[in-house]
Structures are given as structure tokens and as C-alpha cells.
Image (cartoon, rainbow, N blue to C red; front, side, top):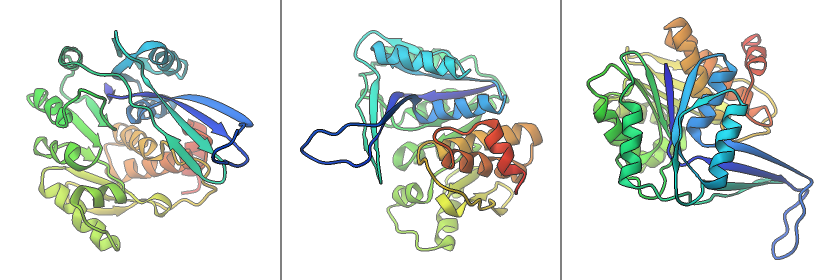
Amino acid sequence: MIYTVTLNPSLDYIMHLDSLKINTMNRSNKEEVYPGGKGINVSIVLNNLAVPNKALGFVAGFTGREIERLVHHYGVESDFIRLDRGTSRINVKLSEESETDINGVGPQVTPQDLRELFEKLEPLKDGDFLVLSGSIANGIPEDIYKKIMKSLAHKKIHFIVDTTKDLLLNTLKYKPFLVKPNRFELAETFGVELENENDIITYGHKLQELGAQNVLISLGENGAILLTSQGEIINAPVLRGNVVNSVGAGDSMIAGFIAGYIKTKNLTKALRIGAAAGSATAFSPWLATKDDIDELLMHM
């Protein structure tokens, strides 16, 4: 079974404008509302690929109820912890010639809430996948992903970590099956500038030296690079298309990679499906469907 954890989910409220003018009234010409959060995105794309999974995390208030409703609407099983205070955040995205994001804060999470999350994770068993991704809510310690992995270290769980800086580095001693920074997050994690592909590979290998088994570095329009536990360096196919959406492409790549690996147990084939899923989302108004992904796979 695959589980995703989203510690600070959101309602993504997307407003489309012809132009954005400061200090005056602006009117949108179209709005969309989606459930947001990196783990939730992974869950939805996995479901689109007919891969069963369960979304975990915290929700609160009327926005939390709507997040839960929308997640179920998109076919994903969930077991969210419902907080009795605050509201889940709303992230406003203003889309015109460029994109402007205003992200909410989210509810306060208490130690008791965290204990309940650990209780929900305890039943995971050998061979399960656990995706830990995204930012954390108020009240959650900076080493939360490390603590989750430590609590499950006695089991053979496939940990997949998609975050940056200390949240990522703290997890590496538990040898995650896959970490997926993009090139900017990789540079941020080590406090360096990455000038070329050799630099990217060098710092990807540093993540492996610290414990990561496989490192998948997304490069935007230039595809991705996978550094495998067997010492291989595999470049993902670069797919060309009209980029209309910058949200969720990396999450979709993770979902496609997991789906491909479960099906084939082959990292190269998993990367191929991951690249198709990430590109399909980038070329779509929202998250990729199976038809979107299959269409790109036909041309790879």
C-alpha cells in the first residue's frame, strides 16, 4: 500500500485575470478551486493511474472539510486527522501573464495531534511506500520527517522524501528509497550555486553519501536526472509542449515514478513514466490524467 502525508494541506483558489493592477479593484474572469498540498497531489495522480493509496495529514475547519470532500471527489481514500481549532489554509493563485501566489498559514498542530498521526502510521508494514513531502504546519517540529522515519525504521518501508534543507537532510540517516529535490532545492539545501549538470550530479551524489538510495533531480523543461543506488546516472526523456501549469509537476513525477516502479521494479522504466506524468501536468490546466500520461508515453 502507498501512503502520502500532507502536514499542511490547502484549498488552492486560482483566479484568472487579464491583468493585475495594484491599489485598485481587479476582477477575475474565471476561478477554480482544488485540494492542495504535495502529498495530496501525489495521491490524486496515483489514483488517476489506478494505483490505490491513502492520503494522511491534518485538516481543520470549513476549509478542511472541503479539502476532504474534494480529495474524495477525485477518488482518493483518506484518513485525515480533523483538528478542533483553526482552519486549513487557503492559497490564492493569481494567474495572468505571470503567476502570483499568496499562501495561507494553516492551523496550529499540537503534540497530541502528532501522536495521533504516529498512531495512524504504526500499521504500515514491510513493502509499503510512504511519501513525505512539502512544508509543515505551525507547531510541527523541523525534524518531523526524521521522527516519522525513525518510528518506522524497524520495518522495511520505502520512504520517499520531497522537501528541502534540514527537513530533507535530517531524514537521510534512515536511507530513504527516493529523494526528489528540484535543482533549485538541491542548491538551497547545500547553500551553493549549481552552474551545470556536473554540479547537479556532484551534489546529488552528496545526498547519496549521506544515505539516500536513489536521487531524482527534476530540471523543469530540461527533464530530470536519476542517480540510482547501483551507481547509474540516467537522464529522463525531455518532452516538449506548451507549459500552462507550474503547480504539481514534481509531485506528478513522484506519482508516475512510484506507479512505474511498482509495475516494473525497474528504475529506468519508472523514470520514464515519472517524466511523462510530470510533463503531462505541466502541459495541463491541473494534475495529469492517465490519458494525458499515456499520450506522452506513446511519443517517447
